[in-house]
Length: 204
Ligand code: GRF
Image (cartoon, rainbow, N blue to C red; front, top):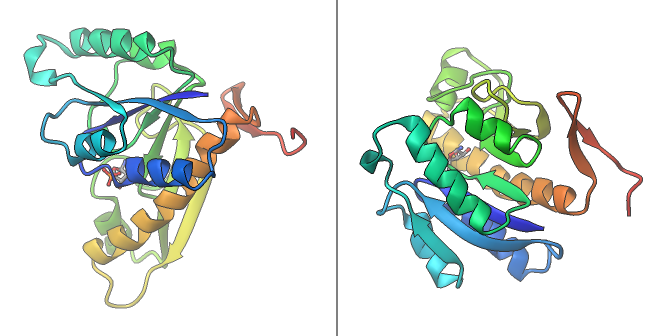
């Protein structure tokens, strides 16, 4: 299963994929390329250090979102990606792009979706007085952070937690569930069917 990973920042989730591969936890997965819309993204450095091809496509050089996404698509498809993994890719994708990859495009979001789509998820969970927080891996559909959930990780909110503390604890859970979801996909156990994420425990 060929993966292309898209990111804009630190790339700690990418690192989790690299580490999982190295540890033999992603036997059917090959990370073909990492693409960033930001040249300074530290994730590109992590990819290079792991010997993975990197591409920067600077969105500010495009006249429209459509033009940027079209170029992104050409680049991804040049690697014959089976699965496109959004790992902190801070761009809203056009419906055309999302439709092209429907069923083979996944994202991780730092909340227990459907709670808190969008930004500032941890602060919003704190403001609401939630007693748990977490992260969700989901198939990407045209609705922002609205696609069907594949797997969630939950953590308790402790008294005295601030958004940064929550973010750190949630992120460490992301690093477990995201490679796991990709593993299931690569094993053919996970598909998007009738707008639902279907997990087949019987395969294997
Ligand atoms: C994570 O919080 C993830 O949930 C969100 O973007 C962040 C990416 O972090 N989609 P990193 O770049 O993988 O460290």
